[in-house]
Length: 255
Ligand code: AMP
Image (cartoon, helix red, strand yellow):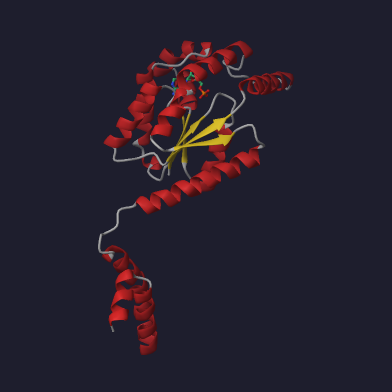
């Protein structure tokens, strides 16, 4: 599964991504986390991004596109990934499309967490105040003014991505203001739908032989074991294999 989680800062993307990691074994690719790690490590990317991040501005597209592309190539991303915080601009979405195409991959779903901005700002301010009261370390951009700017950046540059992915028929909107377990259930429903769609779109051989062979092979290995025990088992195995395949059904009818 390859997913994008879309939503403004504080919408709960991180929380939901972590749950999906635990439940489906997907890899969470958070560009914010990757950039913060680069800042911490003092790499050239980190040095370029530090000031912009502190001001709540977006880091240049080429920087994030490059780090995401490299990360997707790593073996642990093969099973699938959740992009959290990327893409954030339409050019980034185009770059992601190109990047995935080159790698022979496709997005399965884009999940937008829809939230009320005013309520969100209140929620974030409350969280920051609570963290301060507990003397917990705050992020440099966990500041009401910076948050306001990050929300503005989201509205101007990221929100248009919903229309972009709507046109690509991969967008699913979920009420991000609902309690966390309800948001999680809504996301699970979207994933089930996307998986069903993916399975239905998987290319099949026109004559159905691919399916027939798959059925026979799976059955065949069991049948072999049974054959050693009794001839009746083999007959049962063959019949049920036929029943499970379009081809088998036709053969049975002709007889
Ligand atoms: P986040 O943790 O996703 O809220 O990201 C924190 C900060 O990292 C953002 O305010 C931006 O400065 C930067 N950032 C993260 N992801 C991106 C992105 N896809 N494009 C540009 N800047 C980003």
